[in-house]
Image 1 (cartoon, rainbow, N blue to C red):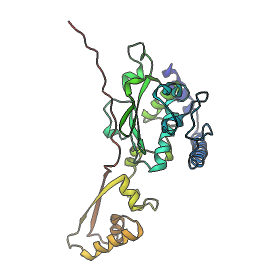
Image 2: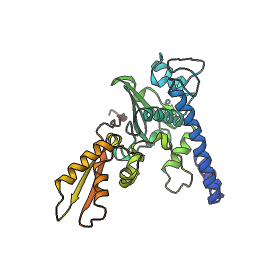
Image 3: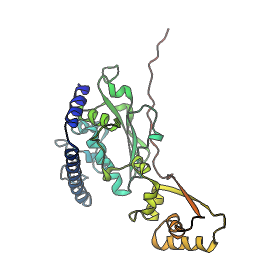
Image 4: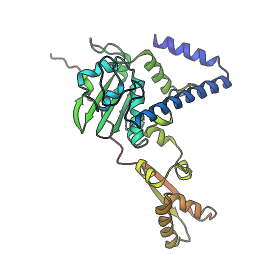
Amino acid sequence: MLQDDIQKFNEMVSGLSPEEIDADNKKRIELAQAEYARFEKAHKKNMCYICGKSYKTISHDNPCVHWLLRECKFKKKDFQQLYEQFDFFQINAFLRWIANSESFAKNINDMKDEQTHGKVIQETIKWKYIDWSFECAANDFKGHDGRQSNFPHYHFQMRINGQQFINFNDFHIPLTQGDQLKLELMKDPNSQLKHTFGPHGAGMEDMIQLPIEEFFESADFRGDELNGIFHFQSIISAPNGIDGGDIEDAYEESRKTGKSVAKILREKFADDDSVSIVSIGSPSESIPEIAKRTEHKKTWKK
């Protein structure tokens, strides 16, 4: 059935003109921006934009994803009630917005290079003292053998102050048809209409895809914020040497303006062809490590 949905979607997209695709993407962005504005307004009041109640409120007649913030009396047994109401992307997007409201991008480790090969989903999101982790292996996505797992599903882990609260193997959480379609679209490099979490749900994978020059040239990135996401190292090559006073002045200007030292030096020596500056960025050590599930393999006794 999933393949039928993918085929129908691709046929629908192939019938659209470039202008129609652009218009559809623009509409999606506008709707996402409006939804985020509602989230932001409510969040500042410690309120949930979905149910309209305080984060400290739990109502079993009206399950809500804000329970995962654990500001209410949410228990592990309540989790099934929650995921029966919200799909993977609704839960994940909400937690990304929450994490980014505290510190942009660096609290969401979804970097491909740190994921186990072959995983459909593997990421960890951190906020205050809570870690949420999602995982879906290829076999989980297909639905493997077993009465509790013979359907497409994912696994979820939650840690509070580093202590166990929900473990990966406590639940096999169904992936809806919509979840599966979006995950397939995210994997397909040829898809013209991709699903993303948008600018407000961006994680570290989105950050490392940006050209490094954008960090130095953008006025939106101040030094302290930048260093919170990445560590940068600049290598300066100058056959004729550089006056130590120029470097000292660059550090002083960086402290006053928030600009990175590399950006200041790039500007200063922009017209000097004899000076070459190469900057290398690596994710900050403050980024949470991706929690990984140990998959249990069946064994047979002879």
